[in-house]
Amino acid sequence: MAYQALDAYLERLNGSIGNAGAAHSSSKVWLDEQGRAIGRFFNTSLTSAFQPVRSFGDGSVIANEAFARSYSEIDDGLHLWKLLDQAASDDESVELDRLCRMLHAINYYRQAGAFAPGQAPELHLSVHARLLAAVNNNHGVAYRRILSALELPHERIVLQLPVVTPNQRWLLNYVLDNYRRNGFRLGVSANSPLEALGLLDKVRPDLIKVDARELADPDSVALLLLRAGEQGVRVFFKRVESREVFDKLEQYGSALAQPIYAQGYLWDTPAAALPGAAAAGSQAAA
Figure 1: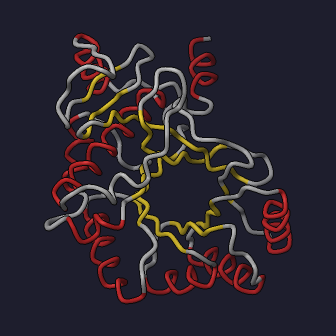
Figure 2 (figure 1 turned 120 degrees about the vertical axis):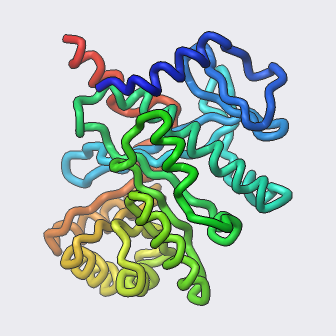
């Protein structure tokens, strides 16, 4: 599936190809020799890495979560999860967030075009906690405009909101409502299954991501999976990094006959290449 406006934009970028050491403005975007979109925020060159979310059972990739990485010609770069924390002002944090999400959309869809229509996995994009209060107008409208300008579909994009404290729930609902009005699908994060249960009743997201390292209470896990299934809310478990956690999740899925979705270093490390895109492109060419 071709994305013509994106292809035209990439062609313009390719015509003025730069390198990671060149002098670029903080909002400049360019391509490297592998076709990766790169942006600069102050003195840091940024690009994207993707970690699959897999379905238990067949291990199929149903989504990819995007992460900002420092740019490197020889590897997938370094994790920059603290960069937004260090942004000096709210305006700079908003600028950085929008730059990252633009890079992620470009780097995702330039590869997702290899999939048949409707077959590309979802793209999950995290919204930093600082952005919840920093944006002083309609959340999601600026990103929707970027996607519209590049003629990219937003239906397969899930915006993942961060863990919040109980007294921030009103802000979470306000932001969720804004994103929904701009047509985005939405996820929320929880530190534990018990916390996720509280969000399930008060927020009603499209999906909930739960830290898989906090599965000590089997009753909470079971109740979360059952109630989420009744409401049509998918539960994703992140940070699956050991066989012990994997076995626990597999047991829950089997006992409750509920689908289990998970991501973590047990299966995949974040990488610039979108899993399955090369194979899908080869099949399409054949």
